[in-house]
Image (tube, rainbow over all chains, first blue to last red; front, side, top):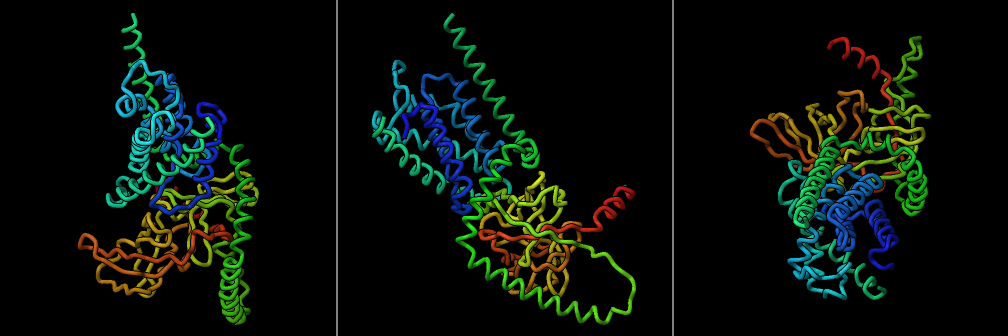
Length: 168
Length: 271
């Protein structure tokens, strides 16, 4: 796995997301996403403008290249990207002088990494699932889908995060 | 100065956030899957190349089940042919040549999704083979969807497994009909609505296409009734188990309604 922040890393994870979206059929209850994992790995030094535009590009790219409604992933990605730094400060490190470029599992520890990742995944999936299912699906279905998708996406992201920390 | 720059940066970030989210919402509301298909023609061609090959690999592993399905369909068609041959013998004295209402074009599914709220399929037949938007797609086991967009060699089909899709369906026997939509959860369940409460619908009753459109021919078996419940006190909602297995879908038929143009012209005149 390439070093996070490297463009090839983003391309490879995005391709993996495309393969998951197109070929991994997990049923209607689970939606697997790696977009929040990618958003988390955009260097913290980047301005919110760049982060939101990058997230919008990733989301819209996924909408266009895989099956789905255009705008769904783009909306969710921007919503997860916008408060990224705010959540980093309250969940990982409140020190404004912090020079961390990319918050890696080995640097911030499993607990903080998990909290930060889970919040980004939850925001993303809440927006995605609500926009996709609201008014056409019962609240129970939406709640179960959200919970199952969040757990599955966080676990998959952690599976990718472990080899990254070993090689970086 | 630094404060001013900071404020300006925050304001532009908020503005950018609003613009990007509004743009995304507009795209969702427009639900421009069809427009996207047209705009992304070149990308789609490259993707279709990949999908065609991966569908062949998948087909290889599913060929036993697909063979069994095609054998069953063959048997059904042979029985139908025998009935038509008998009827034809009786009609031989007539000289009137009638054009069939529907013609069918065989196609292969090269891309299929079943896990989303808005599923779709890509077929390996397009404009060059005479496919047009609005045509229905069926198999012997039921309806599959409606052609939403076509390119030269491919067709984009809005699957029945799509929360926005409705099929006009009727109950065997009583002929009571209503709109049928996918439940959005299991790929083999749909709900037939607006069936009057006085109609008796027993579990196991067959549901067919009504033919009240220029999309699907009538009397294609769709599924069987699993259960019924009264909805809002005035009508019944029937849960239907679909015959079609969307997960293993491979060979389908695109339906051309030969009366479509005439019916649409009639609608235009009536407006």
